Length: 247
Image 1 (tube, rainbow, N blue to C red):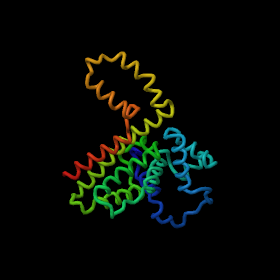
Image 2 (cartoon, rainbow, N blue to C red):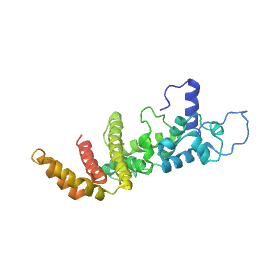
Image 3 (spheres, rainbow, N blue to C red):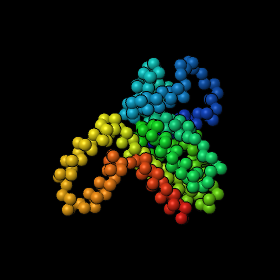
Image 4 (cartoon, helix red, strand yellow):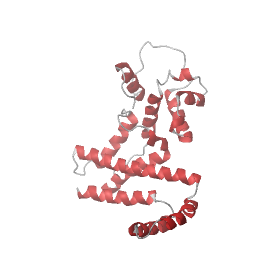
């Protein structure tokens, strides 16, 4: 996410992520800081939750903390670094998966946990997912997910792929669920159908789209909306778990 970095920049980013386990540098003194890195990260998360990903900036987070923008650079070197720390902090809140649950429920818990996190923090859907650095929060979550699959007869690579398949399915569904929530805030689905449904019925040649007309009518009457992300998640997850179980 941070792109190409120098060795020094890479070390600083990883040191920030793993600040809880990195010992303080001996002999380094300076003025007492007004806030902590954790305070900065929490402020960034609160801002993103409230106003969205695009509103997160060094200046905006500094304003949340009543600090000058330049002073915030003593805590984090860039917006990219701040976002990376925010992602890891959210992952650290991930709930453990009960080892006593049946295997199918443990796998379902992986997908449900990913989806719940994205619905609680929709800005995560806008964070570039490739090459995110592993911090303690994300790594502990991965460890818990792997533990949920341990003993199921999967190879190490298969365990990783099962987690990827469950996570990517949950992410795609969460993206649709977030879009549905945002649209509903602007116009209810009932009103949307009242506005566009009769027009579409009048304009669409029924003889050219017999299956679309039949199925569209059935799901429209059931969902009373363009789709059903919650129901689609439950249905798709069940089919995905069936496929994983079948090997």
